Image 1 (cartoon, one colour):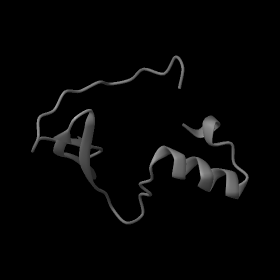
Image 2 (image 1 turned 120 degrees about the vertical axis):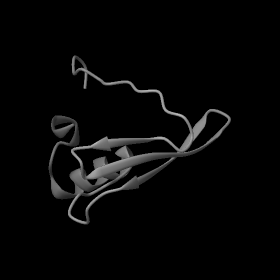
Image 3 (image 1 turned 180 degrees about the vertical axis):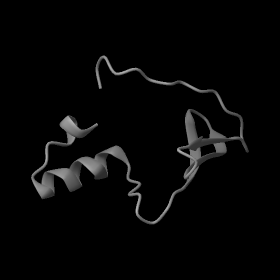
Image 4 (image 1 turned 135 degrees about the vertical axis):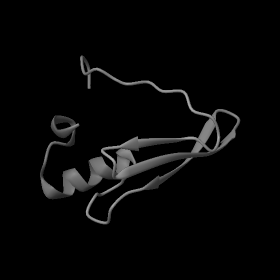
Length: 68
């Protein structure tokens, strides 16, 4: 992702971020240095943690770093 522009947003608990009108990221809670988020997306949109995404790509023979 080096050189890729990144949008950085600050949100409070209960606030949301909407992506493409279809994906909703909700800030559920904060505990120490961890943020609990909720993600609502259509069933056809896969939502994975980065490490799971990378493993799925490795299993399918795709370079995960080339996709992100």
